[in-house]
Image 1: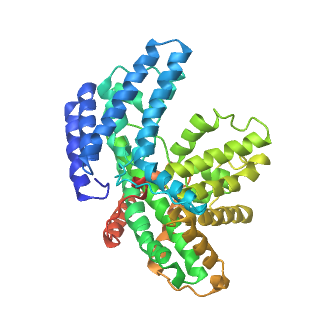
Image 2: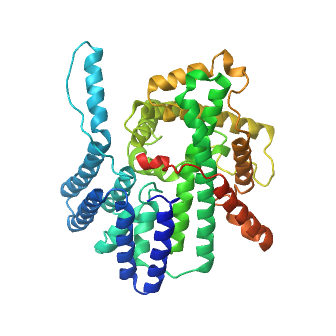
Image 3: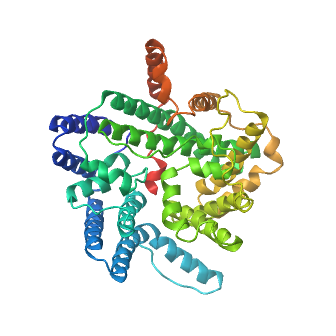
Length: 477
């Protein structure tokens, strides 16, 4: 069930009405409704994979209780590894089995040997990478005694399957979201209005920006040999805003829907394309995943405390694993490694935390240095996005080779002025609202007629520029 579908706009009001009719004092009943609704929401794609979520919930719920009962370090570590192996085992099978088989066959072929191993026709469960990491955070935090294991199985099921963020994040920590299922949740008008506003902005990002950019990104990437280098740069530009509008739009909708039910989710994007270096970009892009890897992989490996070799090793591990998390393709691994290469000079020169404040804080416009830093960071991010979008590594290398050819300065073969105007207008709104949690968070200070006129404009644009309905990119992860 897509957020931008008619089915969801029927589903949401029904669940919302039933939820608040139950009343805030009946927490258990509300949690049961959330769990059932979440299973309906997920089962809309393929009901067979509901058993996978249920099994994962039972495993981690049970291991959490067993960790509480056992004080021996060896037994506790064994229980933790059981959880890790089961969760990552399912993820590895459904997402990476065919990748490893194909890579093994290709390796033998490279050395002149033939190897025949059949791949399997495996359907990738939607959002498996997201809810796997969410349940793992629970087990790891219980193991580290950062969180008391819950005895409320219904609440735990609701936490694992919470429909607003189930299939594409944000990846919530058990320490943040799980306790909210045990608290009385009262309907707050101002919170609900804020949630609706963020949903509106998320839908605008998805329908008007992402889907319209996707049309031209797909045309250019699929026919890159026919276009000039300047047009290929434009294709990478369109993909950059497709993936940003698509993914941050989903996060905005998820956070907004959660507010309607009295829940607060973690922020997942903080205007990443206004970053002044790649380290700042990664503090602002997919924050829930970046911090997950930081806390559960990077820091346990030693972080940046060791010598130069250890810091280089840990940086490459974190970025390559992050790339591999996104998909079973060498393009994602190269994308991760390329970002590690971008990041390393800042880390080694201890400049990775220079830009921690808001760009052009207290000013309407950036200075020349800030503008140059933002443009340079955006440009190298575009180069990396080419690998992320390409069908394979050869496709990405050929695309970049053609892009940086002599035709780089040629006239554009494709110039969709309307879409470019929409993207420019979108950037202006994001820039003006960069001090908020999301771009239009603070429009409530504007006079009511102007504010409602702005809302209506966004809605009109969504109807005017809606095209072929496309799934959110991160559903495949």
